[in-house]
Image 1 (tube, rainbow, N blue to C red):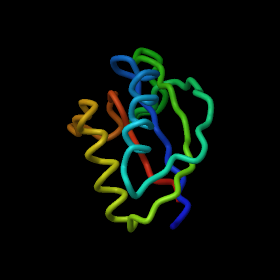
Image 2 (image 1 turned 180 degrees about the vertical axis):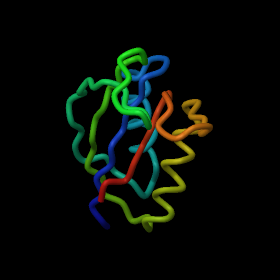
Image 3 (image 1 turned 30 degrees about the vertical axis):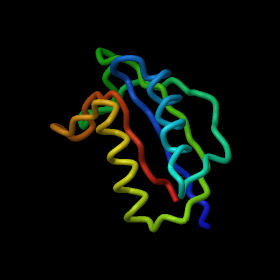
Image 4 (image 1 turned 120 degrees about the vertical axis):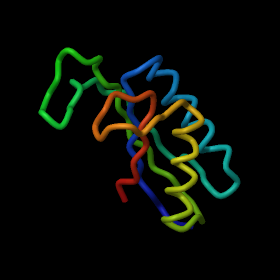
Length: 104
């Protein structure tokens, strides 16, 4: 098993619910266990032009995982979780329902 740290965030819809539900989905994967979850932190929206206070604020969290998936397999799984929560990739740094990044 390998320890991985992921970051989760969103600013569209119900990000608090989306982050909590996404962590549950991730934890249900037979090769992934969520070990720790951080509290939620609110931040301004950051766009390619900088901070944009006209966009909804983000809610963000991090989680520590234990997984036997390879980095590529974990990325593909997390991308599928994002899509399941309505993530659409049309523009870089655009508002989103859910974003999950592998930190390490």
